[in-house]
Length: 464
Image (cartoon, rainbow, N blue to C red):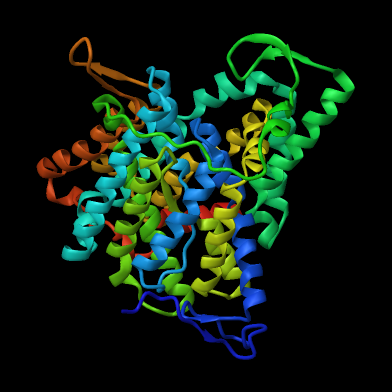
């Protein structure tokens, strides 16, 4: 049985031949392969550690389960789709909405566990019936609108939670991160978020030395005098130990808030598979269903023990494009490094100590980029917003999602925000399409044509 764990040596094992790439079933020498694995881990550091912190989950468990998820994905795809699975930023808004309504970490992981199950079923459906079953339900106008409302729904989190903790640090981190994204090139541009975190740590430490404690809202929500950078938890943390685990809790209201993210995850996986296929010169369309299903299984396993859900990472596509090395052996090495980091509580304590002002500066850019990726999907797919069939459901859904409009059904059940906005976009588009005159029913480009790739869009934004 081929599990994709055997690789042939590429050339002399040192560098790819001129004009050639190291294919998924090839590898360089083992020292170079291990080094590339470490580079992949560094590339995903920023998002993979920021996301669980923003979701209120254990960063140690997040990085450990990202290693497990990557291994599951590589085995499921038989080593044909090189990919690293890390914590998905698409769920940050969901977690914020669930916690705002009184939900706990168990409620958050229970909701996204269900999303993982739905993603798994979507993958099986794509594998059996082909990608058109997804594209028919989620044309670019729908996908773009949902991604946009998920990102912009996060704006109040930055404005009310992180930025007020230290507005000047937040402003400096925002400026530094923006300059890093725009001015740096290649690998350094792809880890701009990570560099922003390091800069924020340094600035917070300097401000504490120069100005002393700050009088502002603390992470606990109380207005007090406190240090910007509190590393007391780092000294208390062990060097080696298991992260804290907990089971999920299932509540319908939380599940309905989380379900729309399935659309973004399908788009991310489709974009990743398409991008890797184009860069390696190999058609991977037949692997799309398997990739989506594997992502679903990995997310269910992670959230089942209290970790965050996972998705394929565009940062790692950038590393592959820069190095021309698509070997899945490097991803096995990356998964091994992730497992080791996850077993170091002291490392997780450093991540958990990220000052709120630093998160404020980073999330201003990060959340906005997520939302604008929806607009990029429309641009790449040449969606005509002059067509009322496209304009009306997208406009209504986005305003509902971003503004937090709610529908109250009973004293204990309501729909609002991301969930209601997504329902309006999807049902509104298809209902209006059923009654629309023929001249408004223009043919939309398919997601797998490479014109509306959420994952490729992410890479484009990080470069430009």
